[in-house]
Image (tube, rainbow, N blue to C red; front, top):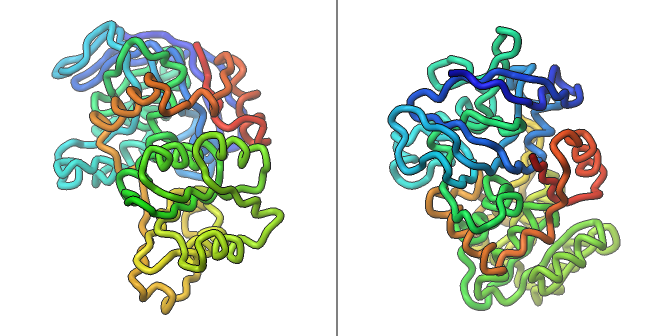
Length: 368
């Protein structure tokens, strides 16, 4: 049977979210129906809602969902009705990268998650008044009271942990933490720089604080975010609105540069400064995503001392192991996500968007 549920629909690029009833298909093979408890709001949602990506609109977005399984379709194993789940990204499970434990680099990642709006077979999961809507966003479209979720997006989690605290694990938090743990892997005495103290950057700071890195330097333009970064584990902070970033980083690293840099801002000028701040054999992880086609100029000779620049999607995480590990850290109080989160009732989604856009909140989480 199909399910009628309330969803936040974006009618066209740049339009506000509109609450209305939509119809979900019955769970098909490899799908589950999930009652949403909470879902994070991410800059990727806003970028698609603005019309900046070719996602089919009108449609239902949302990709940091958390909820309770209500029903499962054929061929679904590992979860059953009543299980608590965090929703993350979809992947095929069979390509080389998926088989190697790197599903964020699935060969079909873009159509399955960001721009397709349909199942892999081209059918729609959501309709309104008989007309298909863009859906299946990151295999979930969780800006709704119920979501039809791809099995590869489902991660079963500890039911003793509040779902509103762990909803952001599906995207932003695992991206920041994965940049540190899965890519940089700081050794004892390492120096890390995190460019941008939003949700992803602060997640990277918290992850770095759980490593043997000696120096964790957070950079932002807002003093209150830098103060929070210090409380979450940064050993040093730099206000780039008040100090020259290159000179300050050189002074803080004794002229040696940083072993690792995480760039979360999507600003190519900041990215270039991050590259210039690398130590010999250092690595810059590019997380922030500017508009498609954006280019950055680099000093080629400056890269020759073994410096590396690598892009990153969703922390390069294998979600079935990585997300539960993050949940355990939240449960133990070692990953204090509550310091980042502001909750909003689902009908207040447009207020959450405004607060996020104006920098009044770091990580808005919608609750149902």
